[in-house]
Length: 490
Image (cartoon, rainbow, N blue to C red):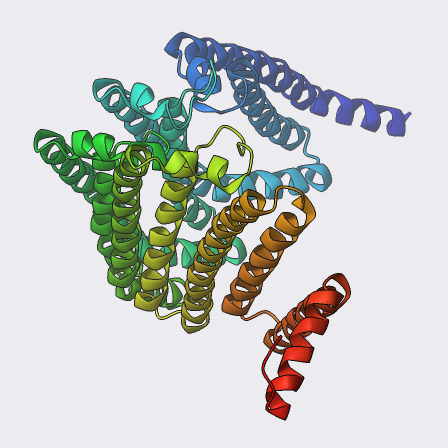
């Protein structure tokens, strides 16, 4: 009977503890639910997380629910600790108390990190808003649309503003990790951002130099173009026919673009020096310096070629009417050759003169650029072109003389047209020999061939004279014999 009474007494003693524990659990659960509801309502009413998707964060409603759940479970953890303590169950309450102590110890760090991240988010939002206003004021999207159109949902200004937003958040990452005392992660990130912070002013300075340089170069280009247009450079170039050689691009625009590049090159060198990256700036500076050193020669070569083209066009325009007025276009008829295409002989000679002058210009340009092999090639080409033109003249004269000889022979020997044709062919072949010899093509073969040819013609003439005029030849021989013997000729 006594054990039963003892057990009943102990049961009656723990009833208040159990009742208190149950009350703590029920009240704590209600408080946790109320706290979660209040936190969710408060965050939803503040509209803070409603803008999160716009800033690139997760969905605002999910973030609010997650924060409410964290508050609920944290309160329930405290309730469970009080519940098991009320039941006097240290075996269960001790681990929960240790967990709560750890959470409470880490909570200030977590709140500090959250505060840092929140402040960084506010600053990032503010800078993004200011950037969008600034870009809208300068019509950034309209100016950049020619280079980058973007999309309907991602305009260039929005992309740049979003980039600024994330850069600010990245700057908040090192102090955020340090507040959480995640040294193994925060130390490399801090070192990286220290290097970036040291290098960032150089990047900003280089960007400013490039932007200012582009602005100044554009102004100088417009000034040069307007001056050249005012003094009539484009009109003179159009009269000289240069605009057709440049594809319809105005000379003033070409010169303005060259000046634009000349202004930008030193500025790009200065920007690369400001970056202070030897691996990039060293080779780039050497390359740009080499280009600058070579630019005067290149510019002089371009001027020489353009000048030669202008002179060639002027010479062509002068030669064509002069040769036409001298009757040069009837040359093909006098040579006995039909019309060659739609071009008249005067046009062909004018084009040849133009090409020859341009070849001279190219040769001089190559010499200015110190292209030795190209200079030798152009010199040989010019010399060969001269010999080719001279050979064509010799052959043309030979054809004209051959026609004249043919007409002369036909006038004296109407019954021997073959003889007239042979005479013309002999003269043309002789002119062809001179032309080929002038070109330097197989001189020895030509000399031997024409020696044999004219020797054969002489032998053939002698044989023809002897066979065709035997009686006359016999009388002449008899007279020669009588004279030798001292007699009188018959």
